[in-house]
Image (cartoon, rainbow, N blue to C red):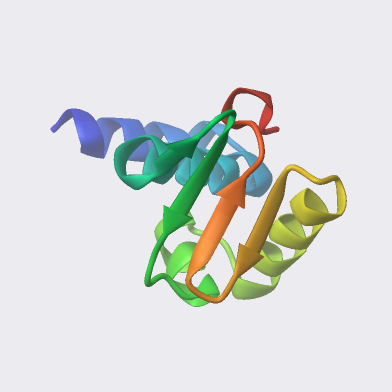
Length: 90
């Protein structure tokens, strides 16, 4: 019930970028492997899966992830995302 409430609140109050970043944070905290300040998240999500979960378009997910990569906050490949500093991810 709490999970559903949190997700509904996120959809209502956060913009697309914040929802995508929140998705990355939650999954990194739950399933990521900590390596120093970095967190490695191995996954099977496509960008379309992330878009569906966050209520955004695939193009928006691509844009946000490329922007995060450009600012050296994340590095991603097909099956993994390396978050440089989880606390500084914004």
